[in-house]
Image (cartoon, rainbow, N blue to C red; front, side, top):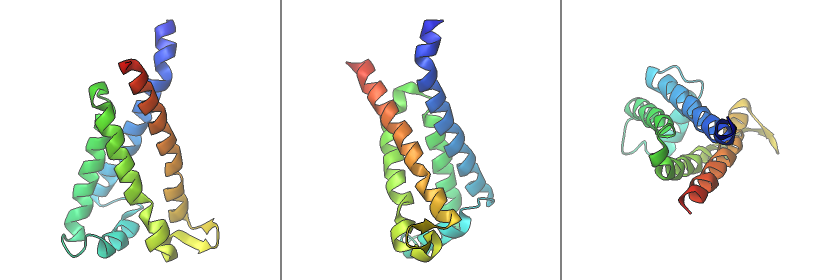
Amino acid sequence: MTTFFKQAPENFSRFSLFVIYFWFGILKTLGDSPAEELVHHLCEITVGLFIDDDLFIPVFGIFEGLLGISFLIKRWTKYAIITLWAHMAMTVLPLVILPDDSWQSLLTPTLVGQYIIKNLALLSVSFFLWRDHHEKLN
């Protein structure tokens, strides 16, 4: 029973990241994401010259879904977390390059901005998993 409680925070963290990434990825794939307009704007500015956003968004949704699944496979932890960090770097971009979408006024985020800022919680969970993963290796 004690092993269960020792593993519970790690397992719940993995499951939470799976649910968030898989669910949000599926919504993008189906064209039903509340963040779709933001992703369209970001795509136009960044990768729009290279790939059509009508193709990019569902492919990005598949990528997010696979990232979510990777958190359920413990031996993929290192790669899943590094990929999450790269994803986080991309998701913070709208706060800087799309200020009209992200901010109502100075230090007052829009709902989209709040959606992005909440990713700090996902980032903190990834740091916990990273530490836990490396402690088990040593």
